[in-house]
Image 1 (cartoon, rainbow, N blue to C red):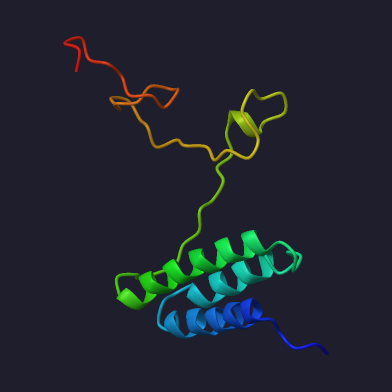
Image 2 (cartoon, rainbow, N blue to C red):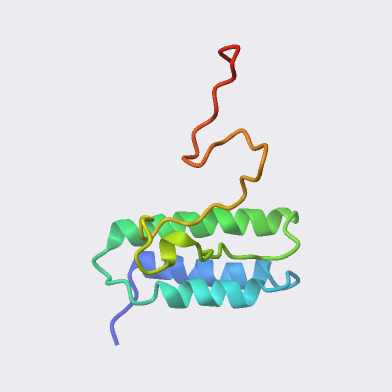
Length: 118
């Protein structure tokens, strides 16, 4: 078996560090393992994507070590009209249903302009 490249060693080290940092955090171990499994099929030649994911993992490691994290969650794609057959939504865009009545944003996500121009 060939030796690991420097980047591969860094990624493996990050994986171990994330698992250690998330020991007392509910859902952390499963989330870390799921993320690494999800991206395990990336080709070795896709160095830019691997480096991006590595830096993202380092930022998440900093957050876990800071002690502010109480649990690790995941962004979940919500089913909406865009996901229905014949829907007019753009595939791959997360649905944002957080704007309720009285929200400063209209349906397009742009801020509304008040009548006094502000």
